[in-house]
Length: 239
Ligand SMILES: O=c1ccn([C@@H]2O[C@H](COP(=O)(O)O)[C@@H](O)[C@H]2O)c(=O)[nH]1
Image 1 (cartoon, rainbow, N blue to C red):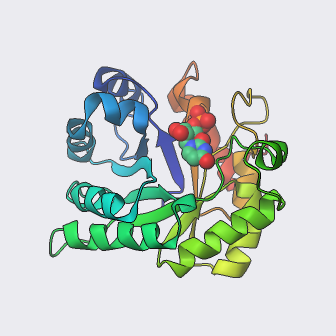
Image 2: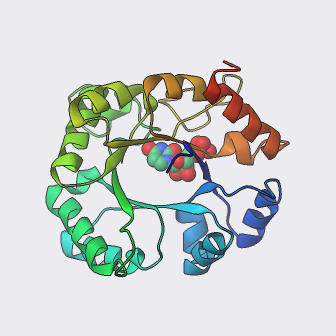
């Protein structure tokens, strides 16, 4: 998995997805299917994207009792996607169950999807962490604690802000994946994101993958925005 860019296909219909992908006619992309698209289009959208040769992060963020997560993951494993995820807040028993389900459901002769855990959503601020969620530790410490739980459970990596990547890599190792949403070009609106980083900063901080949605999908020219992303990542353009 060399390509570090994951495009969030946050659309309601396959028709919208087709319209966006027309901007990238010759490219095999790494795309993310989240709740909006999956809940409306179902497994068909996964089959469609796979048939088109795209790699897929199925971002459903499972968070339930261990038995339910295990059985759900067993089903999802059959889709042959590249990455699935859970909320680390579900705890180690739930994360271990997720892996058991994936291993049981992965067809023989194929590789099981990577399983990663959301530490703290990139829309969560330090203030919200303390005042709303009643977590009294600093954000970085909290993210690291959840990452350590994910690693201890045998997961392959985490979702976090690129800001926390150096700490996670230091404690969980270089091979532990860091998948980082909250990516914005310097001149973009943050919108609902809080712990935001530019593509160039994310590269410098060592993110394994960056997840980028609206900065590409809502751009006037998505292909041009994607080229800008590639240039910034290479350091040819810093803002
Ligand atoms: O902590 C998280 C976990 C997941 N996401 C998802 O990533 C994309 C980001 O989209 P943008 O338009 O670039 O903000 C979106 O699908 C989220 O559900 C996240 O942002 N933060």
